[in-house]
Amino acid sequence: MADESAHHREAKRDLYGLLGLPIDAVDFRSLIRAMDTAVAKREPFLISTPNVNFLIKSHQNVAFRDSMLLSDLCLADGMPLIWIAKLLRVPIHERVAGSDLFGRLKSRTDKRLRVFLFGGTGDLAERVGEKLNAEKCGLECVGVLNPGFGSVEELSSPEIIAQINASGADLLAVFLNAEKAQAWLLRNHHRLTVPIRAQFGATINFEAGTIRRAPPLLRSTGFEWLWRIKEEPYLWRRYWKDGRALFQILWSCALPLAITARLTRREAKFAVYPDYNDEGVTLGLAGAATAGNVDSLLPFVRQAVIDNKCIKIDLASVEHMDGRFFGVLMAVRRQLARRDLSLTIAGVSPRLRRIFRLNRFEFLLADR
Image 1 (cartoon, rainbow, N blue to C red):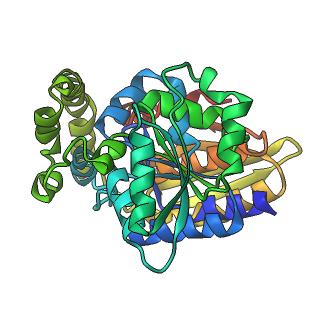
Image 2: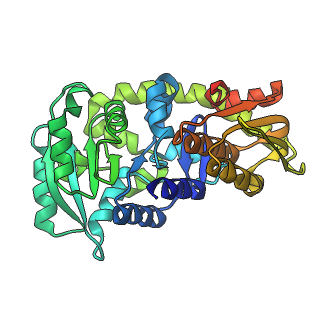
């Protein structure tokens, strides 16, 4: 039953591919509604919050990228991602930051979530937990643990997992560095019983008051990084390194994609040609594999999943592919992986292979 629910949820995702990242087109209202549903059903619900640093790391670290590919929702937590989405005509319009999500959950008056605070330095988590309970807000702290600076393996001991699970929390808020947090969440995904899991990064510092968050104007205009450097001067090295890498990605991938998208005709009629056999199903696609044509493909995917069949997608007759279709490929890959089934992509022309490369989704072609 839980497996069917997960597949249904996956099929409903409005998921897009953005330079190798999965990004959901979701606003705060629908996000919180999805979280409440997962809490009510006590279903695992992993949220990732990609920003520029996540984008850069995902191109360098396969395991880190996989942690987002396996997430139930990926939020655009960074204005540069919104700008890139606009450049590439991907309809991601709203920044959904982890810190803002934490604040909105706090401010709710109609429902209260039990939260476990994991990580942070010193006694920050304990202080934030006491503050939450003193305020009687939308978050009730039911557990706190600062595990120190051990490895992912050391932080995954049976004692640590048991303490988190015993709390009965609805939300597990992780305050480790991005790579360690994502690796830890992925490693312990099937051992945790807390339904909502997410890495909230610097939120713990904002909530404790040790670091002031940037004013709303700087956050909305994409210059929050300047404020962060003022508050935490050591961050300039990370922002400088990420900025250089981002410029290279924009120049070598995003701009060529934007030009290609504006020169490509997308009116070609789309069709799906299924071929069923004992080993699986081959879905031959023709025309423009774009957002407007996604609904034509999904019923065939749904039936293949129900029949427990591997899927081969033949793109030999596809003329163009956009971000929404890359999102569908990632979603199909994830649905099949849940059942130990494979997705194979074949018939990729040199022109279409270039589109995969510019979108940083070459790894989808390597899956067998």
